[in-house]
Every structure is written in structure tokens, then in C-alpha cells.
Length: 323
Ligand code: ACO
Image (cartoon, rainbow, N blue to C red; front, top):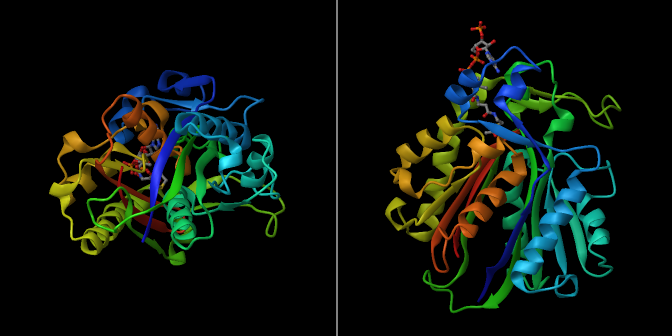
């Protein structure tokens, strides 16, 4: 059988850091409130010359360099984003062009904060199905551009950035001890739209719109949905929380992450946290957290890594990878 093995990784952050203290000058909030409710201390905010596609291309180039590959070695690009530079073409096609690639296929996946989990699952299906050999899977967002900067309930939560992985199709006996994507599960339920959405779009208002959220409602559903989909990945692999080396959750809120890990019985020492430094970067948060834990040597070859996310829609999902 074919397994999708991670060959490389990279990230790209905007130049500007915005601390909670800086946020105090924008809305009626405090450093203490933000840290206590979310765990966030700072976030990166894109400047005028930085966009989802420029950050995504930066992450893609870093991932290719890390893999020792060039654009000629890639035949599939999937970008997870809800904040593309243009309504069309897809951010993936724009990034393909920035990489100087004129071959292969490129498209976007839109599942908000679960975008990277959806994109990885899609790339895995393409590679295992023989439709591509090597994929760039990118999560890139500039949520700062869709925030209502007068709404203190949302604008303090999000940040901008991009992360990328290179996945490669490798022949494998198919054992659980083999490297690659071991299992993934995706879920969605559109009845929750009003709890987290953007109040605009090309076909409704012809304006980009702003993010609107019922924070308490999102919080109420998050832990149950996350733990439920992870249980189904455990069932699919026959693994348990004990078998996990690293838990890399979507970085929305430290309280959601802690509560999910506690409910699943995952040792807090195995949980990768970056929400303190990056805020919630939506589809970019998992690859940014992965890159942190790879660069500082926590995640090593053959480690079992569990990824999960939940976001607008609602969408939610989890992926188990042997690194
Ligand atoms: N600074 C100071 N006070 C604030 C702020 C702020 N930035 N934002 C809201 N408040 C106030 C409210 O006005 C309210 O004041 P009131 O009691 O006088 O009316 C009070 O704080 C409590 O507001 P709540 O919204 O009830 O606060 P809560 O404890 O629920 O915390 C939060 C809000 C952090 C958004 C929380 O609900 C949450 O984390 N929800 C999950 C949402 C999330 O993570 N979304 C990310 C996208 S989805 C995903 O990625 C999973």
C-alpha cells in the first residue's frame, strides 16, 4: 500500500508583533483578561506588503528547502485558507505561480480553522490514490483583514501566519509502525453557522465582511466535538492516548486545548502550545505549531503525532501521523 510520509516543513510569519499591551490601545481590554481567558500574549499581524499568498509562498519555499526538494518535484498544492488574496484564482494557484511552477494541480480547501486537517486528509487521499506523487500542503491566513477591530470579543483572539508540509507517496507494508498518515476523520454540521461566520461574501453582500462569533456557544461545543472525532481516530488505529508522542491541536484557546487533553487522558507534557505567541491563526495554526515542535527537536522521526481542529461551520477533524 501507499502511505503519505512527511518529507519537509516550513513556516512564514509577518514581521509585526502585536502584544496584548498594544491591543489595549485598540479596544477596551487588558493583558490580564486576554491571558486568563485565552492564553494569548501576542500575535503577528500582516503588514501592507504581506498577504495570505505571500506568507503561504514563504512557508512553501521553506518547506521545500527543508525537504531538499524544488518546485519541479511537486505535483499537487493544496492551500487551506478562508482569507485568500482574491475571490479567485485560488490562493494555491497564486502560490504555484510564485514558486515558478507551471505543472501539476493546485486548489484551495475552505474549512476555516479545520482547514489544515481537511487539506492533509485530501492530499493523503490523492497520494494514496496515485493521483499525485508529492504534495505541498499549506495553511495560510490573514484573519486580521476580516476582523471587526471595534469588537473586543473577537479581535484580540486572532493572528496571521502560514505553515507548510511536503507529503510524499511512499510504498509501505501498511503496518502501524510504518511512517506516514495512519488515519484521519473529518466532520461538519452546518446548523451551527450563526455561532461563527463572516457576515459577507461575493454572492450575498458583495463585500468581504467581518468575523462574527458567539464565543460562549463555540466554547460549549468545542471540547465534545474535538474529543469525539479523536476517539474515532483512536478506534480506526487501535491506538490510545498512551500511544501518542505529541498532541498538536488547533491553537484557538488554551482552555479548550487543556480541557480536550484532560478529557482524552493525554499527558500535558505531550501537548504542543503556540497560542501564547501566535494567537489563533485558523488554518495556519497546526502547521505553525508543528514547525515549532520540529525545529526545537521535540517531534522526531517515528513519533506518533495527533492533530485536531474545530472551527466555523462547524467543521472538525483529526489526523494521526507517524512522523
Ligand atoms: N477584554 C475584556 N473584556 C472582554 C473582552 C476583552 N477582549 N471580550 C469580552 N469581554 C467581556 C464581555 O463584554 C463580557 O462583559 P460583561 O459580562 O460585562 O457583559 C465578559 O467579558 C464576558 O464575556 P464572554 O464572551 O461571556 O466571555 P468568555 O468567558 O466566554 O470568554 C472567549 C470569551 C475568550 C471568546 C471564550 O468564549 C472563548 O474562548 N470561546 C471560544 C471561541 C474561540 O476560541 N473561537 C475561535 C474560533 S473557533 C475555533 O478556532 C475553535
